[in-house]
Image (cartoon, rainbow, N blue to C red):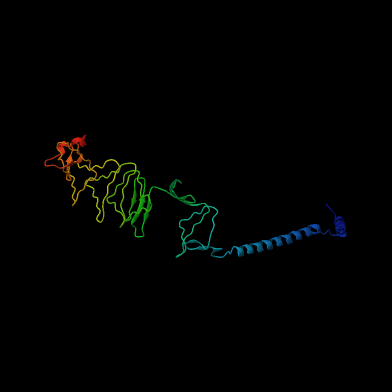
Length: 293
């Protein structure tokens, strides 16, 4: 145990020593560097704020949108020309009321319709090479909903009242043509021609060729046949002329001397060939059969 004298001596020794003071903070070059970094950070913040305000001013950012782009209740609204560098996905694209919708491209404009498996169903391409459409069915309708043109893999339908071909060569069909009526324009000629092949017209209930204000001509290079299997062929006209029929020569004994015959009779060979023979007091067909050979 310490005595009272020892405690008093120890307290006197401690009181004779000076109290020690510890400094708190940053001093010297560290303090100057800290102030420099704080000042630099404030300058960067001011520059960033100025650039942000400048960008907002240039891009015309507002509460409703950015520049010519406006955000409305119905979607996005673009005013003026717009350019998209990446694909645009939209449910509906429409112009302003009373203004046209203009699509422009330096190469082509393609419209593709795909299914859930990303398989192409319908494609519409307009480019420098032309206009191309791919799909199962192609239809053109009038404003009233009437079908004007339709095309699919089975047939092509023209629903207009009149089909007009403006080409000088007319219409060329490599296969058969089925139509109930073929008519030329008023005061124009109707010409059906097959320069290198045959021309066949067939109908189960008959064919009617009618020219109310003109003539009908049937011209061929080799043979023209009028055939009726179950009926008859009628030639109903005021005058019937058979041009360029061959003339049979009668024997010299049957020819009348001194008289030049100017009347002929039409004769028919067993094979159906017609020829002319000089008429006499009796029939001269039987002695003018050299044409039938």
